[in-house]
Amino acid sequence: MADIKIHIQNNDNSITTLEAPTDMGLSLMEFLKGNEYDILATCGGMALCATCHVEVIKGFDNLPEISNDEYAMLDTLPNITDTSRLSCQLKLSDAMDNITVKIMGDGN
Image (cartoon, rainbow, N blue to C red; front, side):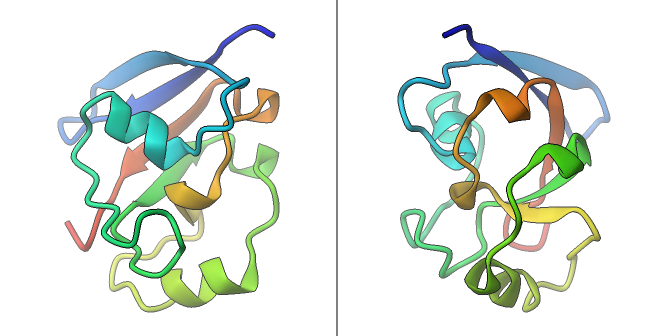
């Protein structure tokens, strides 16, 4: 299985593109942390803290449907957008090839 491309919109609006494996069962959060992005992930990927909040700039419609637990956690955030997701709840898959995300974190 080929790797997919994940684009990260940085704070200065530049884009960093990373190759991500889809065969390791990683979540987007684990992949971003592994690439030294500043994601707290305080709860360890259980959708309990929202410190791995990302805004999906491009490719939102390709993602799996949001769960009630994930939505309930996102709904507590002051900076939620129409395309907000918790990166811990997004398993890397072929459908995510070429998505663009912006790391929102815990309110920044």
